[in-house]
Length: 84
Image 1 (cartoon, rainbow, N blue to C red):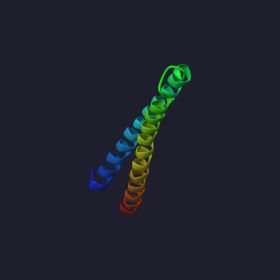
Image 2 (spheres, rainbow, N blue to C red; image 1 turned 135 degrees about the vertical axis):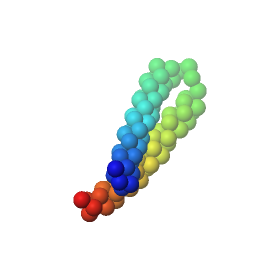
Image 3 (cartoon, helix red, strand yellow; image 1 turned 90 degrees about the vertical axis):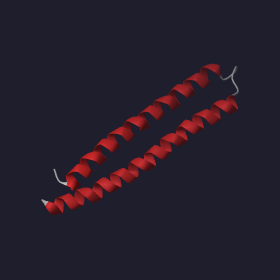
Image 4 (cartoon, rainbow, N blue to C red; image 1 turned 120 degrees about the horizontal axis):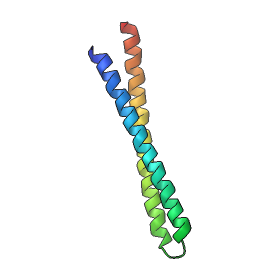
């Protein structure tokens, strides 16, 4: 397997991993929101808001990273199409 093809396969794996991480963040946000809905009268809501915002920010960072990986994969794909 040539180095470009290997790089492309690595980027695909990285995309899948990032997509899984993003999905996990989204599930955590939903779980936190459900918890807040049930316990809003007994918890410190501002702290809960900070927590859900922090998890959301992690998800945003992962989406940005995914965008960069997709961009890099697109460039490698273009180079591969010229090689074939």
